[in-house]
Length: 59
Image (cartoon, rainbow, N blue to C red; front, side, top):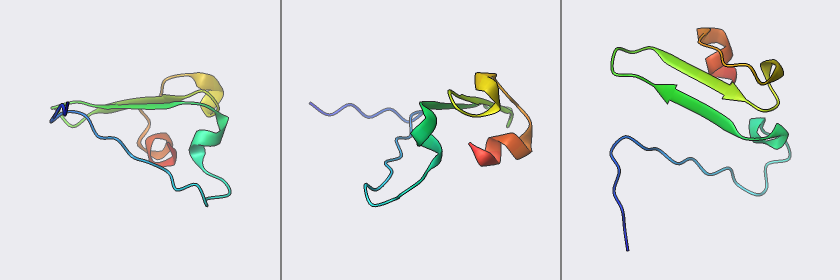
């Protein structure tokens, strides 16, 4: 069964990458229709949500 969700994007990290942002835990990023976004990571920014554009680029 295939489910197509227009609001969901999956990104897969190649196995041959030695380091990447996901090594410290899950990463969540939400983008909204008004152009704003919020994100968090288990390992970055003490796990706290952030909407700072500089931090979001890191995630």
